[in-house]
Length: 147
Image (cartoon, rainbow, N blue to C red; front, side):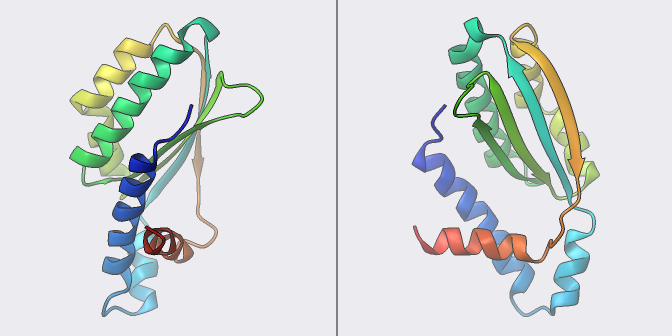
């Protein structure tokens, strides 16, 4: 699956805006506090090979809609393993648990979930903690400056 430059650009714009909001006229401790409630998850998904193309299309549609329509969805970044494209990983970042709860109830996520149910061979959800939450907005701000 190729992530389109348009999708990367949208992600960079979103994260760049967050970086500006977090660091403009605020102290670093405030940025630290703003990130304390952030929810980070990596979804590890194995797709049935015969459904791979359809799954990719549906996932891309869902990721685009989530970023565009849901203010609490900060990042939905799908990728797949180079050597095994049936192995999909999605980096998901939400403003907080409430944003995640709203996301899984959203029409775009519900459509994704119901239309891909038989396509998914396995699913593992791994909740993560950022080692350096302050660096994250800076990374995306840097990405934004290259566009």
